[in-house]
Image 1 (cartoon, rainbow, N blue to C red):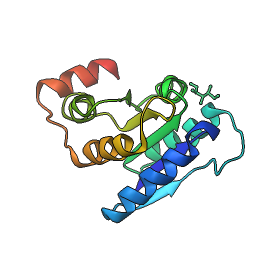
Image 2 (cartoon, rainbow, N blue to C red):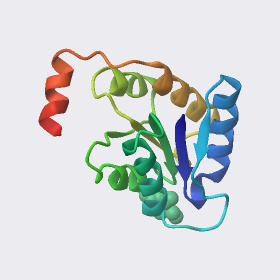
Image 3 (cartoon, helix red, strand yellow):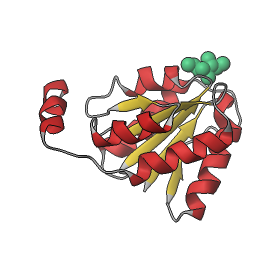
Image 4 (spheres, rainbow, N blue to C red):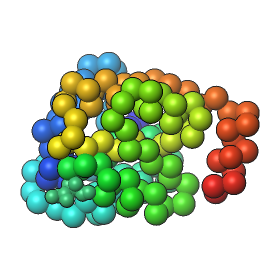
Length: 139
Ligand code: RB5
């Protein structure tokens, strides 16, 4: 199960990402917002808690720039949130950082790219090895 959330800036992009991922067979838990103006830290917290409890394996967070969501998500111990806007980063943050949350900016990316980045993020595994040592240092 994948947790997903956005603030009011990211509603249309979130709909596009949910639709693309559902088509690929992913199951998603949508933590809002459905359109109402909201504060992004509240949504980031809801998504991060689902991951930390084990209910969801990964999360996707969308706000205007993706920055507020990434700052918020990285306050939670055990969350490694990566702000991505290119496919290399979406792939390597899984391979090397074992990122469990990806953040994207709805005002900086197109929906097509966002859907592709989400698929890369969710389908790429962690390489482990020397990268695990570095993650242990972060934790
Ligand atoms: C909301 O207007 C905007 O500040 C928010 O979506 C985000 O970009 C913050 O980082």
